[in-house]
Length: 171
Image (cartoon, rainbow, N blue to C red):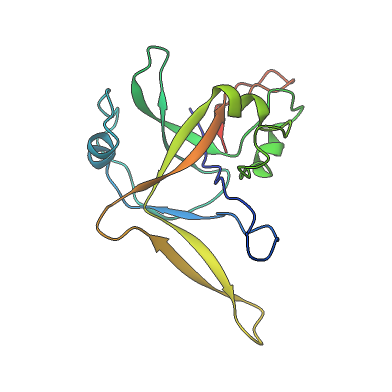
């Protein structure tokens, strides 16, 4: 299975402009920590979850979602939602963030928003600060002190394209 976080962030109330979205995050927790902190009903399938300090769109990472019996479980999903109407899986690289005020109405996210929500556990996310007179930006890792993880709201889909390729994905 594959899914990815789709950060749900509203427009900035001060400026009226659209705030930047999460484009990279870190994963520094273990399966056991995820199982305990997210109160999963099914123990992890794997003993080790490799840490990653740069999870990017199109990569796989755990999400927490309800199974068909309503139990909270973890699944590895690919970051990048592939809408069921997509002709090509490459759209998943562009559908990596949904804005909370638009997710219910945008065609790419509408069905997943109604029926397939999840939590995306992360350790921190990156925001980028432009440096005066520089072409590059300073990355800042933002997390919650005292806990190995917190969660972003996410959407997931089975990712079946018209080409009949099934690949679970998330945004």
